[in-house]
Length: 72
Image: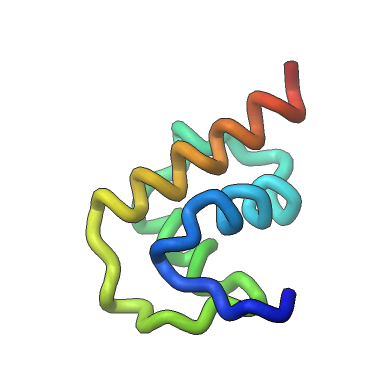
């Protein structure tokens, strides 16, 4: 991925998490675990400490949408 990911890239991150962790159910993923998964993504270039709960929730929602598209 050429673009560097930031906390504001919820839709892109959701797709990547769905591909990287297809076995996980996004809505049962703890926010601390979600934070770790996001910051471990290749291409994630934002400061790992400059997030807030709303951004993590937006990422989890986007990931869940990808999960539902794949499993339904």
